[in-house]
Length: 315
Image (tube, rainbow, N blue to C red; front, side, top):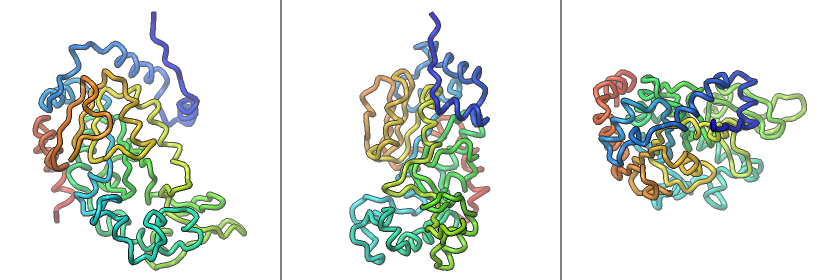
C-alpha cells in the first residue's frame, strides 16, 4: 500500500503562488524519506553524521538561535548579567520585555527605535563561521531551509538566499505600519531610524506607527514560518545550533521531524528532547568550535575558511 501524503492548505497556497516546487517534487522528497533504509541512518557520532551529510543527505534543515549570534558580538536576551534584558536601563522601561511589547511601542516607540539603530544588520555586527556554514551547505545543494530565531539579519549578510531562510521572529529586511499593515520601504525606514525619527504611515489618513517587521509580543509570527509543517516531512537531517529550545512555537520544529531523521545538536548545553531519540548526535562545546569540527569532518573546512575570509577580510 502506498503511503499517503496529506497536503496542507498552506502548502497548496504556496504552490498556487509559485513559492514551492511542483507537487511531484514534494512527493519525491516524501517518498525518499519514507522508504529510507535503516542502514542509511548514521550512528550518533560526529564523524558518522558528517559522512551521512556529505554522502547521502540532500535536505538539511537548520535551526539557529541567539547562541549563534553571540559570536558576532550580539548579546542574547536572557543570560543573567550579559543578556539584552539585563542591560536596558538606559531606556527607562517599566520591565525589560517592554522593548518588544506592541502596546508599549504604541505609547512610546523611542526605546525600540534606539535599540533598532544599534542592531541594524551590517552597522556594527558581522556574520561568523556558523552563518557561512549555512551558506556553504546551500552552495553544496544540500540545504532545505534554515530557520532562525535571530532578528539580526546576519544570515542574509552571509549570502544565504531569502528563499532558503525563515526568520521566525522577523527582521529588518521589510517594514510596515502596525495599524493598517501597509508595507513601507525598508531602506527609507532604516534611514529615518538612523536620524532618530519616529516613522508614521503614509497611507491616507492612517498615520500609524511604522517599524521593521520584527515580531513583537502581541503579534503573529510571519506566515512563512509555517513552511516548517511541510519542511519537516522533507528533511533528512536536522542541525540545531545555539538555541535553548525554550521559545515556542519555534522550538517545536525539532520535535516535528520524524523519529528516523538524524538530529545533530551543536550547543553549549543539551536542550529540548535531544538525547531521547536513537539517532541524536550531541556536541556540547563552544558554537564556533562545533561548527569548525563539523566542517573538518565534512572535508569542507578549507572551503569554509576561504568563503569566510573572502567576505569578512577584516575579522
